[in-house]
Length: 369
Ligand SMILES: [Zn+2]
Image (tube, rainbow, N blue to C red):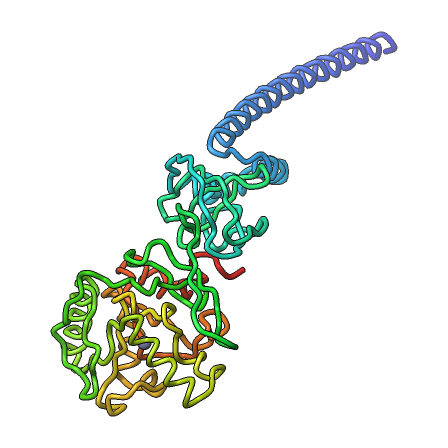
């Protein structure tokens, strides 16, 4: 009994040992399989990482990606597809043509970290102080070298020649005016800081073939702007609206007479809010036109902005290269009250940008911080 018991015991001990052995083997196999899966997983992950690093040049973003990976592999793969590919500067994206020349700021102006009004302001450069221009970006921003840093200023505020000035007026009206070097460019900025020379006359003035308000006297514009004005008025007429032209090109001398007349009637400070000094009027560029409609009796008043014609112009002028140059709520920036009647030709591309961003030329070119 004892024997058989022993035998039995031995048998059962044996079979238990065999089972344990088998279990150990299975466990080892399982561990091995797990190890293989783990290694494969790691290899795949590191391949993913390799791809990410090739796509992204920013180190910070890679660190973020790797962090997410540890938390959840799948979610991270989805993120990868949506992640912005190339954190370049706008200047690099648009392309920079290298140049090497001295340029002069037309006014004291901020320089920025990238070729856009949205870029961080790095510092300020004083007007007339020469600086080294090292590149031109396709959107008209100039790369400059200042304080050993690369920065950007829009070409609207730079001159390749030394700055010229002219002094106008006497007493409280006396002012040294900075003359712009590019009065013929369709995106030239003329405002209370930047003026046209007394002898600047556009040489391609024509009379646009449009309907004129009764009291209209200055009926000329530069050829390109005149053609675009005809298109704008035709477009309005197709929509059943009749626009009237009223005041286009005015010479320096004509502007001088008008301004002095306003000063005599309203005083200098008030006159400045709605009329330009000679040289500072956009009408002298030949690219501006005051327009009106019968609904405001052919007049130039803020009411035009709330008429059907005025609202149509606000929404459609850019399609023909025109902007409302002095929009509402931008008086601090443009220096003028809201003038829904004063439209300025800048070309379709810029007009569309300004319409879509809601910015004035001063803001878009980075004058305002
Ligand atoms: Zn005007």
